[in-house]
Structures are given as structure tokens and as C-alpha cells.
Amino acid sequence: MELMTASPANQQALDAFRRLLGPKGYSDDADDLSPWLTDWRGRYTGRAAAMLSPNSTQQVSALVKIAAAHKIALVPQGGNSGMVAGATPDESGKAVLLSMRRMNRIIGVDQGECTVRCEAGVILHNLHELAAQHRLRFPLTLGGKGSATIGGLISTNAGGTQVLRHGTMRALVNGIEAVLPDGSIYDGLSPLKKDNRGYDLKHLMIGAEGTLGIVTAANLQLVPGLIDRCVIWAGVNSPQEAYRLLLFMQAGLRGRLEGFEILPNRALHAVLRHIDGTRSPLTSSHPWHILMEIVQDDPATLSPQTIAEDYMAQALEQGLITDAVCSASESQAEAFWKIRDSIARRNAPKVRLCNMISACLLPIWPASSLMKVRR
Ligand SMILES: Cc1cc2nc3c(=O)[nH]c(=O)nc-3n(C[C@H](O)[C@H](O)[C@H](O)COP(=O)(O)OP(=O)(O)OC[C@H]3O[C@@H](n4cnc5c(N)ncnc54)[C@H](O)[C@@H]3O)c2cc1C
Image (cartoon, rainbow, N blue to C red):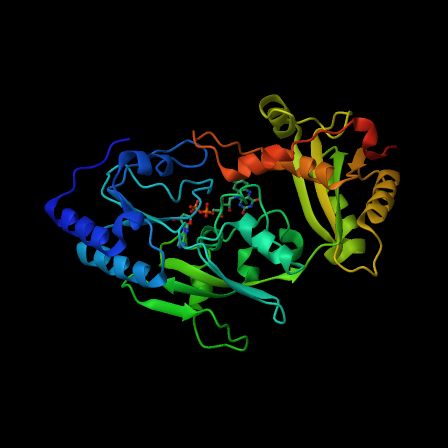
């Protein structure tokens, strides 16, 4: 990794950043920066003059003012788990990385309102854990949950695998705090539900990939915790068949169907070939595969396993699927999702938390222990 020699003007800015942030918040050491200059999939590597790691909104505001005064490009970065290299600096070496990872405090959970306030650098997996301690759930989840941060998820308007029921990040963000390009702080953390005044800055910032400012904190919606879930892996002949299956499932299940994903056979085979410990949920071969998740968050309702088996039997009878298997345990459910999450494999050299978490949940199940539904 090569660091750029700073011009005198840039050097002034770098000195100002260093004074503002101190040794914990400023680094121009090649070894510190190196892991963060390559994107998740290992396809692009950039260069940067330094990496800034503020630990408060005030510090973000002050450093943005310095960057604006010296016309220095800032590249905000959360977990660097995005798939499109949006958090990778260009090759000029003039930009400065702005890591939000030190701003990782959860400010508080409001159980009455079912909301949580947290800083932008909170890792999604940690938010899940915290919500679970309150018997609540932050319903957005995705394969990169061990690395992706709330600020990154907001800035990419991430969808995740439960989008069918809960929507993208946009639907789950009640309010945000952000530092705007002139360094001023936009405080929209206390959301006013009946707010119909003109443009909504919050919605402009969601999905803006850091182009309109730096997200520093958010107020997020939580939902009741899950009692149980069942994940189904089904084989279908075509995307058209998959669509008919989706309509069939949605018609009867509405909110209980949280996830519905279609995978081509070649994606399954690529995962089986390259990811250790994975195995095909079905022994039969199919051109397309469907991954579905049925959940239970109300104790008065039928168990997701009962529903899954009933629906799969009907789907087989109606010719909507050719084969299916329902998870019989949480580890099997995770193993099914693991296949889907491994499709976009990470190539960068650094080992990340999400990979380690997933590795612990790799499928170790005898095929006979799965609940099977076959024609
Ligand atoms: C295994 C895996 C599975 C995935 N599955 C899905 C999926 O199912 N659905 C889906 O939608 N996405 C999926 N993703 C992508 C996911 O949306 C992103 O990884 C995540 O949103 C990025 O979060 P991050 O903190 O790593 O952001 P980074 O990758 O660091 O940054 C992403 C973008 O946001 C900007 N940014 C980061 N933080 C801030 C901030 N605080 N303020 C302003 N701008 C900021 C960056 O400059 C960059 O443009 C997956 C990723 C992985 C690795």
C-alpha cells in the first residue's frame, strides 16, 4: 500500500486533523490503512492520505469543516462491507478515509415506543443482540451483519433478506443525525410523525452513499422479538413458477412470510464448490431454488413449522414446486441462509467477524434429520 506525499495545503489539513483527533483518531500509517483500502470483494484498491476515526458528532463536524476549507475529499466508511466499492477511495491518494467505526455507542432503547437510538458505527449484529435482550428485534438482516454498520446500511438503503415484510432500511429509520457538507449538524433524531414540511432531509440522506453528508446517529424502529421461525428450501423449474409460488404464499400468509429469495442452480453449485462445509439442502437437482422464511412473533398463532409443512404440501399438489425441505432446527435454518449469504464471496485478505460468526453456524446435519416434503 502506497501513501501519497501530501501537498503543502493538504499537509496543513492533515496536521489540523491530527490535532483535532489525537493518536486514536488519526493515522497515516500504511499498515493501519491498508486493510481498509480494498473493497469487500477484493476488486478495487485505492489510496488515501490518512484515516480519520472520530468518536463524536462534534469531531465529525469539526473535521468536515477542515476538509471543506482545504477542499479535501472525505470517503466515509462503516464496515467496508458494501458490494460496489462505494467506501473505497480512488487511486489519487488525495482523499482521506473517514472511518465511523469508533462511533459505536447504543444511546438507548425505548421499549414503549419500540425504538432504539444509536451512533452510526454500531455493527448490525450488535444491534440485533441488544434488541434481543429487550425481547425486541431490529428486523433488517443480511449476510454482512457482522461488519455492516448502521451508517453504512442507511447510506446504501440496504434491503436485506426480510425486506418482503419489513421493507428496506428507509422503512425502519425514524430519524437521523448527520453532519452536512459545511460541517453543520442536522439533528433529526426526534421524529415528528406528522411532519409535512417540504423536503425531508432524512429521506434524501438514506441511500445517498455519503454524497450529501455524514450520518452520525439514527433512531430506528424495532419490532417484537421472534418466538420461532422456519426456513424452507424448495426446488422450482423457472422464475415464472417462483413468482406463482410467491403469490400463493403471500395470499395466505401475509406478514408471516418474511423472506423469499430465488437462486439459480449455478449459484448453489458455486457455493457448494467453494465454501467449505456447505451441502445442498435437497438431494434432487433443480434449475432454480427458493429460500423462504416463515416467522412467529405472536404466541397465539400456529407454529411456523406446521404452516411450512402444510403450505409445501399444497404447493407440491398444485405443481408450484418440485421438492422442498423445511428446517427442523435453528442451526439448519442458519445453514440454509448461509448458502444464500455466501454467493457474493469476499476476496479481500482480512478476516471479518461475520465470516467467523457464519463459520460457527456452518451446516452439520444429517440429511435424515430434516423435515422433508416430497411429491
Ligand atoms: C455477505 C453480504 C451480504 C449482503 N447482503 C445484502 C442484502 O441481502 N441486501 C442488501 O441490500 N445489501 C446486502 N449487502 C450489502 C450491504 O447493504 C452493505 O454491506 C452495507 O449496507 C454496508 O454497510 P457498511 O457499514 O459496511 O458500509 P460501507 O461499505 O463502509 O459503506 C457503504 C457506503 O456508505 C457510505 N457510508 C458508510 N457509512 C456512512 C456514514 N456514516 N455516513 C455517510 N455515508 C456512509 C460509504 O461511503 C459507501 O458509499 C450484503 C453485504 C455482504 C457483505
